[in-house]
Every structure is written in structure tokens, then in C-alpha cells.
Image (cartoon, rainbow, N blue to C red; front, side, top):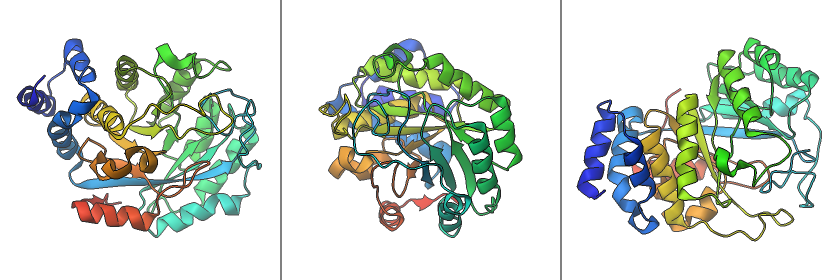
Length: 326
């Protein structure tokens, strides 16, 4: 596709057109060097559904380290020696602390994230209790507690939690190369169970872990088929001690292309840029919104530090964006 064809394509998406498989493949085949061709259409699509407002989210690493799973990129896996901090589930006051702080800021949603294949049912209830004490008129609540079932989701929903986060991480065709201790289908069933329980779902993954452009597209189309509500995109920060420690395949242009591809495939869904955005996008970091992003994770990530809320608010102001109204 040339620039004119890409803009016509984006306008057709805004008008409700349904792209063909060949059109999606043509997007994925655009070279990283030509990524700027994707921006006008991606920006048009983002602005049509989200205007100039950017969703801000923030997380709490509520339980850290000693995860039984062998995800090759993860600092918290017990299969690797990484020096990641290890601690049990925080008490209720510490779990609430970040949410109370976020309530007084432009941050839209606060999530408690825990390590492990799944959080024990008793601890799921403890997280639910902590989130129930936050003022949901001031801050949306979310939990990311692993592979749960319908009973767990009932507990969370009863506590006023409105969203569940559960990443698929990558395309089905690539998953076995990054994790062998549980199946892709288990992750998909968790998403389906959360949706069936009446929760909205935030699900995305991580890039720079050996996936091809075709697998990026495959992944985006899987999330489209699952009708997830928001898609967090993370970009690998190699961690010493993991199998991905020496992988350095991401460039700022490739990262921007991934955002744009997801925006064309998932036009009306929130796309959040999360882990690795500062170091992987480098000087091109402000372009994430023109590539199609409608949200960012602000503050620290699970095991690495991020940008401060103040720095992100200043960036939005400089670019003519604003935090999404609550």
C-alpha cells in the first residue's frame, strides 16, 4: 500500500468497513523504515474513537517473585536467577496505598498484579477486599492474578472490580517457544471466563521475544476475535539471568510499527503502551500516540522503574493531549 491507499483504508475502517485478510497482511509487510506511512491513518482511527484524551493506568506489584512458570522473558520466574525482589502478598493497607494515591490524580485505573500461575483463592479474596475499599468514583479498579476461574471472578466482581488483566503474551504459533509450563488455551479460557463473569478484559503481550511480523498480526487478530476491551503492549527489556538476556532485536521504528498494526486491527479498542517504552522508543517516544496508542502505563512496572506521572502529564500537554476524563 502507498500513502494514499493507507489513508483510504483508514477512512474505510472509521466508516465501518471490514478489512480483508490480504489488506491486513499488506500492513504487516510494510517495512520498518516505512512505518511513518502508517501514522496518518493510525492517528485518524485513534482520534475518531478516543479524541485527544489518553487513558492513564498504574499498577501495584502486590506479590513478587518465585513464579512457578518458565516464561523466558520474566524476571520473576523461579526457573532463572535474576535477583528480582521476592515477597509475599502485601497486606491490605499496602495494596490500597497506590490506589488511594492514584485517586487524587488524573490516573484512570489502578491494578493489583501478583506473581504465579494463579493466586490462591484465599489471596484472591484478600485482593478483592483491598480493592473494594477504594472509591471507584475516583479510580477504576483492575486485578491481574493469573489463571483464575469463574468463582474467583465472582469474588472480584462482587468487590466492585470492573476489569481483569490477563496477557496472552504472544501469538499462539510462538507461545511454546516462550513458555512450556502452561498452555495458550488456559490463558484464552481465563479471558473467556472473565468476560462471562461480566468483567471487562485487558489483554496484550510483549514484543521483541523472537516473533515475526506475521505473528504480530496473528496475535492482534486473536485479540480481535476474543473481543478484549483494552490491549497493553510491552516491549522487552532483557533481564540478566533469563533466556532472553542477550536478545536485542527491537528498534524504535519496529516498536512504532507494532502499535500502528494493532491500531488498524483493533480500531475501537484502547491500546496502552506499557513496559519498556522509554528504553525501546528512545527519542521517538512521543510518536507513540501518532502511531495509534490511546493510553500509557505511568509510574513503575513490575520489576523495573518507569516514568513519573508528572513527566507523562508534561508530555501529554506538550503534544496537545490530555488525560482522559474520569
